Image (cartoon, helix red, strand yellow):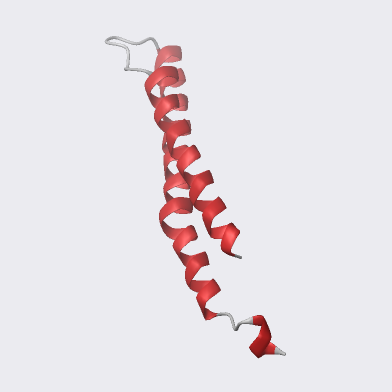
Amino acid sequence: MRTHGVMAFVVGLVLILAGIFWGSFVAGTPYPEPTPSQQTNYQMHMAITERLLLVGGFMSFVLAPLLRVFRRWQLPKDKAQ
């Protein structure tokens, strides 16, 4: 269980970094006067960025601490027998 919390934190950080990369380099800055297809393309890439950041933040800052707390609530194996 200990490694689950650490892995959730690491995967969350990787997703956050992927979201920052995607928003910076793939979506980029919006066009000054976009055509409808350019606007749709930009909105799609920004939606991907938002989801990567949201899921990464949830995994790193909510799920990983909850897994650590859950681990502390469990009885040690020698007392459970």
